[in-house]
Every structure is written in structure tokens, then in C-alpha cells.
Image (cartoon, rainbow, N blue to C red; front, side, top):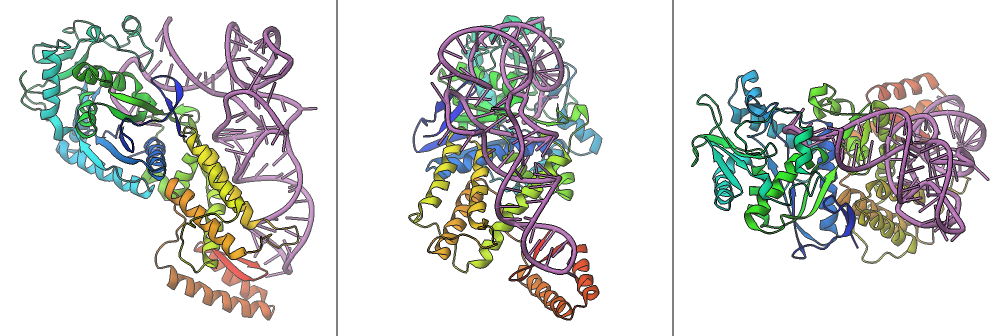
Length: 482
RNA sequence: GGCGGCGUAGCCAAGAGGCUAAGGCAGAGGUCUGCAAAACCUUUAUUCAGCGGUUCGAAUCCGCUCGCCGCCUCCA
């Protein structure tokens, strides 16, 4: 039985979808105005594993992610500037070019991290008519009011405002550090529609004149359009809990009178030296940068070693540790697969109770609010089972070693690859490369037999320089790729 | 100022009332080896920031103290 921590109730709850076996899941996507960074990796890897696990558990998941290509302001809301517009000016491109450029970069990096594409990736600019409809509906119902081309949501009319983030409207006002737009009725009211200056690069006609949609509108509109008025799961970064998600709830529930989201999931932030990574602090690491040094699977493994609701601290040391750990895991799986000629097939029934236990334990961890850290420990339990020796260098097997290897392989495939989304594959062109390396190994073997160590070592050192590490063992020489 | 969270070995990180406090990395010793690397074996927290309290029993619940962080402005 799957349990999920729901931010709305601050409790772990049994997961019961609105319309089983279907699950609607909406995750706040990126604002596409800059290169994707490590923080994106943590968030979208976490939700990717959640989607994968729900699917492996038998649910039919529709996974929606938005692309924010308009509407988020920078700084003070009156003089503030849209981030995409700002970037467009810097790069001297159309806003749409900026958005598309960074959307491409986003999916490029997410693909490398082996995050499944959402079933629908929807752009805010493609849903402006629906947003206007929602604003009109809110005005009609008395939740929205127009002042000179701006439309605001009247927070005082919606009594549930603050239920997600635990805030109260009175306190919001007191603690506010931001200058408040003067035309609002209440300082906590938020914009549904903003009037645009004539020279504003992104604007649309509306019943209130030319303008652009408010910050939070897109997620309400697209979530409800593709998943219905009530959504099973809505996820996003913790930094979106307030005000973004709070406002989404207010808008949506005011409009429909129905609960907007059943389970709110928030993943915690990635920190660098204990501080949140953010562009304004200048400590952000882009994924493209990081991938030069670390394979994307190492980054994925690193993220999965933590829990999605815990903050995770990044450092080279931590990533190096993740690399060593992941490589041991990967090399074990690859070594195992070299031994097996058979196609990987999930055995219908686990013959050995031992292998069955691993799977149970893995599911137990994952069912407990997606404890990927625990789940990974099970992968290492399996590694131990197939590599442990009795002390004299021999692996301890049951009566049918081949069957056991098959079982282990099936588990690595199902648990490691299908659910956690780790890839243990070697790159293409493997065969030719393998043949060539084998040739060199044979060559070196001859030198070794003749005890011409210098020549033998020369081959080994040269190979090491191009990332091929040789290891001499009882059954001949093996190699691994760094 | 308001709201929320965190503090577990050298590092990363699970665990949320009761079997010996997961797992990874690093370290130490050993096996193997021409040397090396890898792999394997053994080992590494009488204790969970500190102090009190509740309880038969607390990393886990409550209170206080200290330290750190997030949100309250766009952010994953």
C-alpha cells in the first residue's frame, strides 16, 4: 500500500486515486529563460521516479508538465520585468526564440538524465484564451475585480487562502517586504491579468485591454484542461508552495467549487555548501557544465541517494562518492550480463525466496513515500548476493547459479532500470571496441608470459590514458571503462 | 517580524516510539597479484546538536537552548 506525504495535510496518507486505475499528475515545469541547472535535475528526477513507480504499480498515469514561456515577473510587480523578456533583450532575440531555445536545452538535459518525457508538455502562451476564460469566470463569480486594465484575485473572498502554506492573510501583509501595487483592494491580492505597455513584447488582447496573464494562471488552466477539475497529484519545488501553489488553489477552487488537488507533493531544494542554489546568489551549476565532468547517470544516482523531501547538499566530494558507488553497481550489472547470454526476462515467479525478498523490500521502501535511498540500498544487497565470496575467493551460490544470475539480472532491470530509471548500458559501438581491446589484452598477455613487464605495462598505461582500466584476475584479464 | 524545516560516523544519506541505528563513499587491516588496480573478506556511531520531561522503553513524542536553512519577491 503506497503512502504519500501530502503537503496539504502534513501527513503521510494512503494513496487512493480519484478514478482508479487512472492517475492525473501535474508537475510545475521550468521557466525557459536560461540553461537548466542541478536544481532542475533534483526536482524532475524525483518526479520521474514517482511516475515510473506509479506505473510499475499498475496505475495509468497521465503526466503533465508545463513550459512557462510568459508571465513571471522579476522584482517589484509594478516595475518588474518578465525574465524571458529580459533575456530576449540581452540575447537580441524574440521572446519566443528564447523560450524555445531553453526548452530544447531543458529536454536535452532531461533526456540525458533519463527522465521520461511528460505525456503532455504544454506551453503557457498556447493557453491564453483558456486563461482569459478563467479570469472572466472568476470576475463573474465575484472573486476577481478589474482596475484600469489589471485584474486581481480578491483573497478575502476565498476563505481557504493559506491552507497549503499555513499562512494567514493578516500576517502576510505585516511581513511583506515588497511594495504593494496601489490599485489592489487588499495587499495580499494577486494578479490574474496585467495590463501591458504598448512596447511590451508579449501581449494579448483581452476583455480588459491588451495585456498578459498573471503568474499563477497557467498551471490552474492547463492542469484542469488536461486532467479535470480535480487532480490526483500536483507536484513542484518547495519554493513554489507559496505563493504559486496557494494561488493556484484559490483560483481553481473559486472557479469550480471543487477541490483542485488531492495530493500536493513538494520536493526539497538542492543546496551548495548548505545554501540554496539560485541564480541570484550566483552559485548555480548548469547541467551542461556538470555533465562534462560527471556522467548524467552519476547525477541521477546521486539525487536518488537522498529523499525527495530532504534538502540535499551538493559538492564535488559528494558527487565523486556517488560516482564510485554507481560504478561499482554498474560494473557488477555489466559483468553479470556478460555472463548471461539469455534475454532478460522477468521470471514469472521468483524461485529463490532470497530474490523475492529483495523485491519486497524494494517495494516496501518505495511504497513509503518513495524512499529511493532505501531502494538503492536493496540494489546493493543484490550486488552483495552475487559477488560475495566465502573468504577463499569463490562466490557462494545455491544449487542453480545460472538461474540465480538470471534472477539478479531481472531484478536489476526491473528495480534499477525500469523504476529508478538508472541505465547500466554500455555505449554503442561496443562490439568493435571490445574486439580491439581484447586484441591488446592478448598482446599484453604474451609479454606477461615472457615476463617482459615493461612492455606489458606500457600497454596497460596507454589504455588507462584513454580511460580503459585493465584488471588481472584468476580468470584472465578484464577491463572496465572509466 | 510571520510561517515552516533541519542538525544521525571524516563526507553523502535512510530510519520517525521497542529486533545488533540501512546503504554509498572515504579510512584501516587482510586475501588475491610480477607490480598495480579492481574485486572480495574483516573493521569503522554503546549512540543520533545540547539540556530537561513523558514512557517499562526515545534519533524517534513534548519543552527549552544553541547552530543552520527555506519561504514570506521570480525561482525546481
